[in-house]
Length: 200
Image 1 (spheres, rainbow, N blue to C red):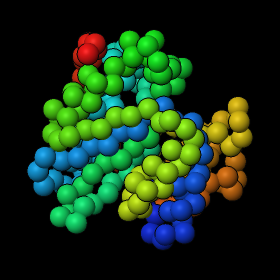
Image 2: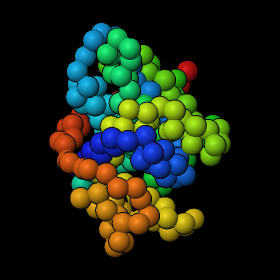
Image 3: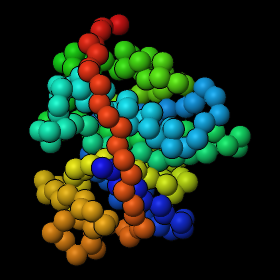
Image 4: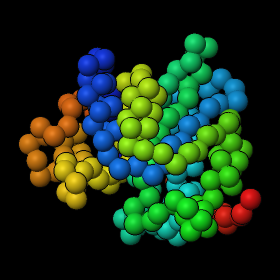
């Protein structure tokens, strides 16, 4: 199950943006739609892409082992009303930077693959921590509707992690380390056999 957070006010969105942007992330992912679509359909497409990428990086049945991509995604509605999905993604235990990382997760291949699922996709490795803060603040938390992956770990201080527990509070804390929000759970998409990565 994933965690959904709806953030009604701009001050809270800014706090969420600062909090999420301060975490370590490996990839930006933006999905657009080639036609008018429902926001839930966009979220299902995003989850499908993340599950397929997890299949590729961590192998089949990664969800049973507790490993897989971790992410936070937010919906942005354009002036025409079409939703875009903006996400920050983490690859636990894996580095996708440099030539060795490209052999594990080829950005060109996966950008094309995700585009073929229903609309243009943009993937980029963050250049800096400030780039993460800027992306999260400008896009991910913009409209105040976030979805967080199951089992997502957040660092309170460098080297220290805590789990986001059901109900919106970090497990084992009093909740002061994160902004408050109304939360609800939503069903995650099923996985499919992984695709082989190709170079170029």
